[in-house]
Image (cartoon, rainbow, N blue to C red; front, side, top):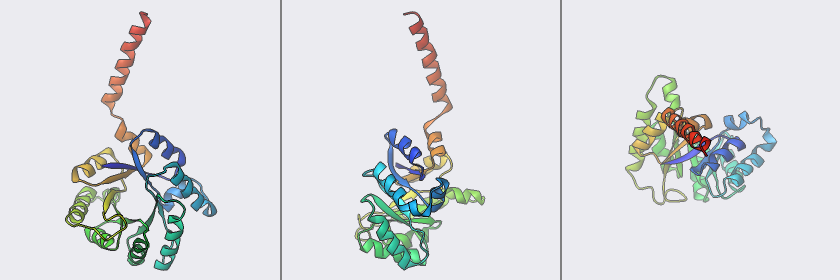
Length: 227
């Protein structure tokens, strides 16, 4: 399973990329707002992320509310850099825009997916990536992992050749809150987990690893002291 980072913060992206295991970036309007960015700087900021992650897919989300607006904005975003993927919400307008963009050779990440039927419709509309949410189910005391399981099973039941730009559909586990979400997604066979920086660091660290490193360092200092 591949790791994406879910952020629009350039410093976080650079740090995660330096670890050597980053395979992509996802952003959304809320994440961009957290950077303090202005409307006029949105597209230049997406370009900065794309350049920082050259060769890795970077999802930039359209904020339009009509199919026509999504198509126009999607083409403009995709033209910024070859690795930009246009992110669209699952809705009537989003599906129509997805089909048009896919037919024009633009990769689409369909987001805000909460059901297998939404995922199947997105795949049929040409989505290259489908982003089912996990954590938001947990927020309302439902099981997000079981919902993800249903999406993974449904999508992987079928061959999506010819439906989209790259003849494949990858599932991005989104709204990830904990390392357990990542583990369960990998066990289910999800292709990607997009993880915020705080959760990504939790995936990396473990108290026994930290304890072991401290022990090794303490013992090595004893060796150095005898030199």
